[in-house]
Image (tube, rainbow, N blue to C red; front, top):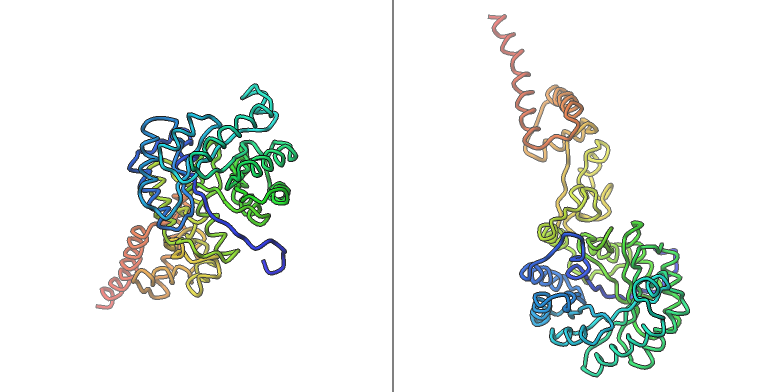
Length: 393
């Protein structure tokens, strides 16, 4: 980071778990669950919370309104199509920001709207004018921006900026087609064109949503969109925990309370019914789990040898696992850490039992299993002594 050139980051996070995250197939949050997640996001210092899409249902509208009236430090945002009725629903919710979106790509104009770009831009302007007249802050979002001609995006954003003084323009990589290089180019081109703050909304279809979000920040994007556990439509969105920790570790942005990330991840996992993969960065079960003997031995000396950041930074815990790849030195450190001390002969016997056991069962050994093996080894080591005593007598 000391050797590359990038624009100093001026960012804020808009978490969209309660809206885009809930669009994950099969996921529906209750009002109480949404309030609990919003409260946690607010306590972590997230600047903007996208609470929902009010026009979807009366219950959704009620929930968004209740979140907006909690007195959070976070500003509350909701989604709206370029339709007066959607804006009315947003107004009834007392939100701070309404995100009015249209798609401008040829694909969406032809197959979704069956209308021209001019017609859709006209609809957007009408909705934006109506929302502005009623005192709402506006985020004008381009759905499928990553497949829209850049000149078309520039024109739309420039016209809306000059005519209505919107607070944000937003680029959505709706199908996750961008990579860090193309993200940086796209955001850079828009950054040169408008004075309005730029938002980036990335999907993870190619597994690059977090990387693209950070590339956008380097190129000048102000508002970074995330979801907890990277949930969302299809392959999900940019991960809140990954973006937040990367901002701290790589860019020195430490104003967010990262110690709540693991607990929030588990909360959203419980509410959504979707458990992050064990190797999920930051909050996965194996994020701070070590089995390899070389790794464990080094970790026992200095955790930073194999951990980029300490688990405590994200509210996690280190887990040293006994398995096929565990060496004698690592095993000694592990058993000492759980309160046992073995002689060298006992330790050698234990390591053999561990390797046989893990190869037969094809999985690592739990603490309870390890304690049972230690008991077996001690009993076996004592048995020859008793036999020898009997023979001598």
